[in-house]
Image 1 (cartoon, one colour):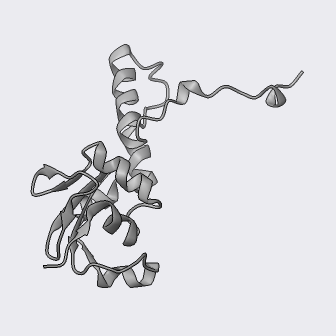
Image 2 (cartoon, rainbow, N blue to C red):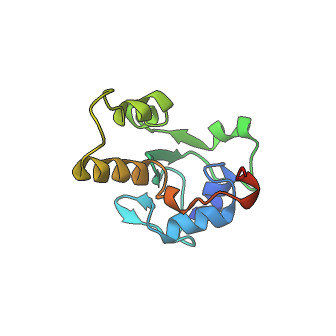
Amino acid sequence: MVTMRVDKWLWFVRVFKTRTLATEYCRKGRVVRNGVALKPAQEIQIGDIITVRKPPVTYTFRVKDLPKNRLGAKLVEGYMENLTSPEELQKLDPSFIAFNIYRERGTGRPTKKERREIDELFDTNYGGFDWDSLEPDSDDLVD
């Protein structure tokens, strides 16, 4: 039976831009087969269903074939079937994200509880990016 490393397959079928990213996601436990997190070197085979959690969306793929090398975007459909639900894909829509954080005009500043909920939403939707760490460059400051 023909098998392939999961990190290679994820990179070959363009789920991740680099193989290093695919390896990182595997190590973090975000790549799953049958409810079990996969390590980067674990083997997959044709017919396996792979779940990849890339916040805010959880993608699900069925392995149709194992490529010999990285594929062009048009050829990917021959090697995997995207089983991701439309509800998950809707989370990528900017209007969906904006709808979840909309506040009525004139309601004032968010309470401490509301602020935590907003921060939690941004952490899950944007991979935990720390917006507070951004500092303006000295060139951006106006005298």
